[in-house]
Length: 110
Length: 114
Image (cartoon, rainbow over all chains, first blue to last red; front, top):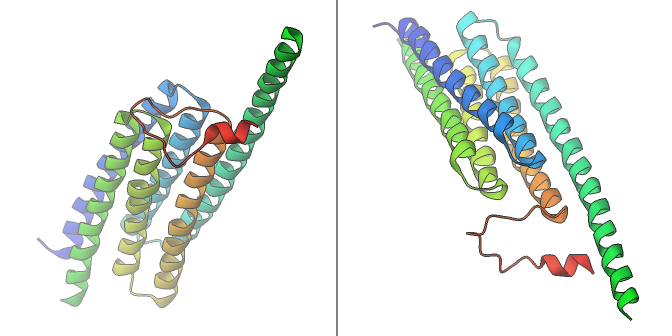
């Protein structure tokens, strides 16, 4: 078996593995009990997408795909940061409301 | 001859990277709560995508492609753990509790409420 034959077989195997990983991650996105679980699964989905594009670059021999993979990583990072800030602000707001209600209850008890 | 050796190496790296990605996906499906799932994503997921970049660097015999693949590899290894840590901190402060099997001794959540 020559090197290029092994490379094409390896790319088929790794694409199969990545597809299986993709499906398992989608199950977590659909099922995920809370919002941070889904955001985390989306983060993994972006990483698997980068791996897909890299395998595509190797099989086609068209290495310009590498730039697309890098920029997809950048977009995924920014998306996760934005989601994290959203979760933080929303959670702090809810928590502040709870604390205010507790204070009111205490004052009413007096 | 040397081209063949590098092609075999790149094929092996691709398969190992695919296995790492699959491991991350199994981890995110099987682990009990958000904070343990974060381990699977930020370690195995990063490794899975990073090994594909290494495979590109090995199989292409061009300096520009190797440098770009290395840059992508470093960028991925810098950003994925940072984003996972940021998400963990945000969800902990927002009040998402870890599973009951987790024993927190270093984090005082009550302190943040006051």
